[in-house]
Length: 159
Image (cartoon, rainbow, N blue to C red):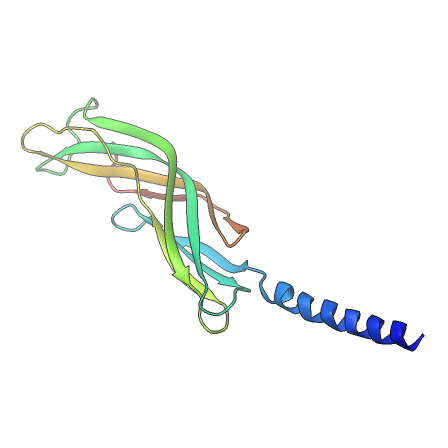
């Protein structure tokens, strides 16, 4: 009976020690937000992940849907022709590798950018981003995902 008690106690101790590392690593977002679009039409996504071990490198990705227009603008700042514009819509994403601090936290930012254009402007006109909207923005990493609610819009030129 005494052997059984010792084995039981040792088994419980081994189980308790094995469970500690599993509980210590539980990556999760404590903050996730977006700001913008800024003057370049980019949306800056900020985040904080907790629950990592110290000095762990993880890949964080932000995704969303971008829509808007590029246009050709003349020297007077006007959009002279309705045909000199190009609509865009589709998924955008950005990723980066981040290393946790000694407390197992990662704080960082990623930037979503409008997709490139194929619009070619005639002489004496310049290509501009007329407007951009981001929706469905989320950030993921370490096995967790945070959704950032809202629609983020900016108009630079009315076309």
